[in-house]
Image 1 (cartoon, rainbow, N blue to C red):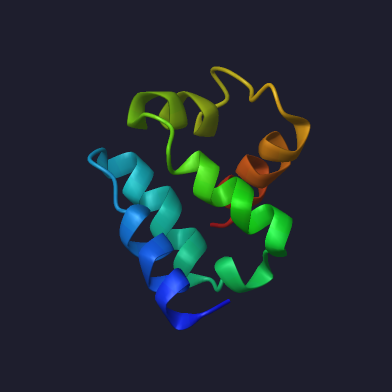
Image 2 (tube, one colour):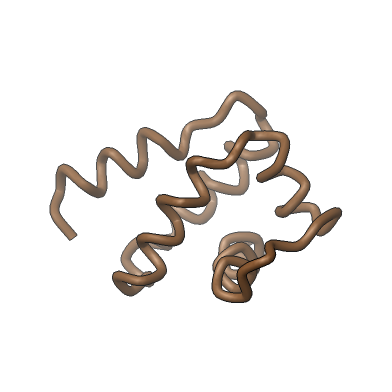
Amino acid sequence: MTYIRKQKIRWHSRRSILELDLFFDRFLNQKGLDSLDEAELKLYEQLLEYKDEEILLLFTNRITASNEDMQMLIKKICEIK
């Protein structure tokens, strides 16, 4: 992954809801991006296109993603403490 792509992803991971920032910050600070393969990176970028409210519902298990791979990525993000 290029430095520029990584920085863009980090920038787009900043959200307007504090709880989401906490989830994303923990993941990014624990080298979460480096643990993702190319397919997962594309899913992560797709996740960032979702509305904040929908991401929060996904992260708090109030709804599940229709795509199993996306659900696995969400689980990976939320597991980091």
